[in-house]
Image 1: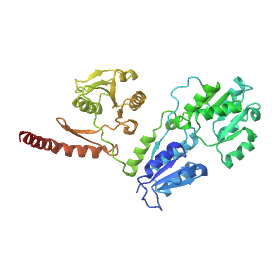
Image 2: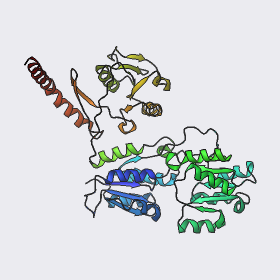
Image 3: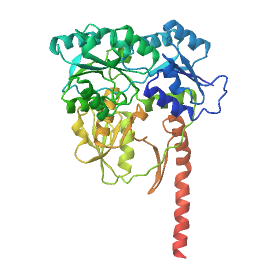
Image 4: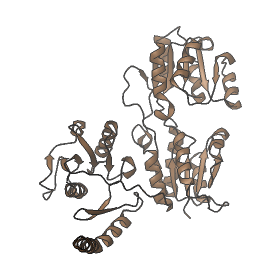
Length: 428
């Protein structure tokens, strides 16, 4: 059986493993199909209870990762490490290039806006800002223990800085070696609520909060809300831009799970085939190429009013659709749009359509990244009002097409037979 190697002890990594492990519980215990590498024993404990997962703790360089991939017969790799683990992500990429295995980067979304915060390019820059702009203020650090050495450069750090870190012996020992007073160390495991963040700011007397952009999974909104309520300033250490590991360049957990299922040949629960009445409803299709044409034709067949937006349209694009020949704009989803389809040839456009639609609560299908949407566009088999839909939940498009074609070959005949029986019954 193919094997997946996943790097990371993040929330995203654990969620991916939990969802995949449900379908590999009866795998060979001596050679489980899921291998997870985490940096610390603490991270290993969080995933060790999952069935079908071989957990490895300890740091590795690129050569060590490549050796593990070869020795364990790894087929594919997911990098779900922290957004700031630049060196680890670089090593993972190098190891995959050396061994020729497929790699997917799963990366949590960051802040969409930096309004109301001071952005620093690094922890060193944040430490310099603290002295330049807040020379006597007390500070609450929530950047992780590995970054603490940079903040020992802050004047009077022993009296001014309070560090929130994980409650492990190694971390506490490192804090002591750096000169942090035990009374200035908050050793706790999150997540932290808005109220708890605010209480920590008030209890420490901190008027500045220093944090990283950990996204929703890292409790960013709770930190920002707490700082605003407590009247504290926020210094945000920006995410490092590092190619595929940089901001906005990763995939979601849902995309990672779908990719892994495809690579490992795993099954999944079927989708619930909810059939919607779209007659007269306004829908949006982003795109004017082959896929957009097929999606538009299906929506029109279901009676929907279609607005299509694209810089270029195929010559045979349905004339019944309202066509806007220009790039997609978020406002295209306004005006009562009830369903959206991202089917352009541009990955970033499709991502933008999905994000904007989700923000408005509009169901959206994404042609080139099915898991990025909120529903899977089915293959429609219909004769008059009698219709069925076919889907393999994004696992096999070819299988979906073949099943739909087989149904189409007999569907009209089946429907005609049933109509004849109904008419005969009505006459009787």
